[in-house]
Length: 613
Figure (cartoon, one colour):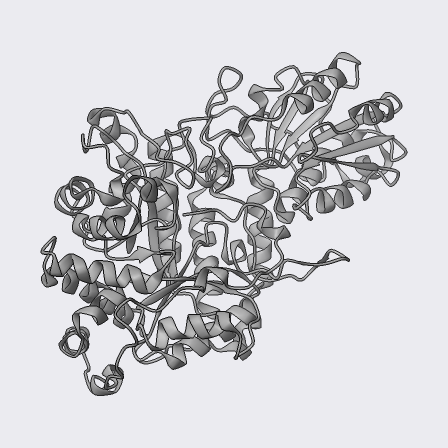
């Protein structure tokens, strides 16, 4: 599933993804309310069977096709809203996937759609780093005012660095509580990919780490928290997206691992999650020749989804495709053929097709062309309806908007996020014993250089503000990763008169990233700092593997993400306000191995305030 990129810097946009056209078959005829007809049913089987008995083939298919929407404000007569409401009211889609938006706008929009839908809707979202991974208000321009929202947790690899499954479980529980409060019922997490390829441009810190057993333990704890919080968990991306250097949003990855290797690495977390009762599994838009020699991505392979996942691993939950607008599936076959192949392979939910009505039509045509029978469609529709009953949506489908603020952004959840972020901070290298910086005088000349994309409005803001509490004269400089030739010489001149130089990188994996390597100009800048005796401390608030490219620096600290909570934790660790105790859940060849991490005790308040040696 596509990550949000620099999600904290996004301005909310209109729901362009909802701009679909009517199906080729023309407007649909009104139908009798299924919800009303089946309201007297008192058991899951009774309600599901009643609903299915009143559905046409197209109705059943529509339960399987879930469009994307944004949590932005849209007027009732706006074309985007008319298109989206038409998908619910007229096309009878069975679920939705929520993208970015503010919490209360998300809740209000979902309530409006739930109210106009005959049957209740399942609402899904990628909440890998908490509900705030999607449900934040962004920044208001031109003032860059943070509009706040749900809690943003550090990414999964930060949990891996803590080694604490209790924290993983509690993060899952808090995420579910906030998500349910605004109307989201299915969380597309945990990520169960084993990130054993440092060049992976899309998984990276979204994974718990590179050791299968650790990923399995963390993933099980996380999903237990999600399910305990009343939400459906979804492990992804089956059978494993960790060992690839290709972004499936942009092209088709191929994992050339043997079946024996898959059994001992990639499949280990998925087996554990299935045994632990994970509610859903999301598919991988990549090929694994050892599982299917035809070269098709797992999403479209009966050998992978039915043969392996259903028959061999005995998974009986919901199989959800990754986004069906991604190049990993579209480039080979085109949209209609990809939809039919995914259904034939065993998928229950077709997520985010670019054209929803035509996707429904394509699946219906698959039955008419005898590529699969109606019983195959009924099987998936039954599984979807049963989840709606399990979640109690046939009795209560609306979020309580008035009560949401008592849950979303709760102080206990904020404290949990801060604890995870601080315990995750990992000091990989400190050859000159520079850390913690709080041993320096408060008058020390500290230069903080932030390297990030211009759209990342929050990059460095919290980090520098926290550093400035210890070093009031701190100087902040921003270098845009979008410029082909930044003025590094000006910053090098500033570094010559600084006592400490901190270089923070926010370059991170994402849905549009094909290569995680830092640009040569930036690398030469860091190298020149080291050669000129500036002793730069590099802080990775994005790609943790950057140490491979800047191995000559004397100090390297990983905070795992550029989220404000991680920025604050990194700064507190650097100055010695908080201890450092994280350990690498990955190797950074050839520089560091799994388990590495220098330990630093926190300085006393007197030491930090006085700058005593």
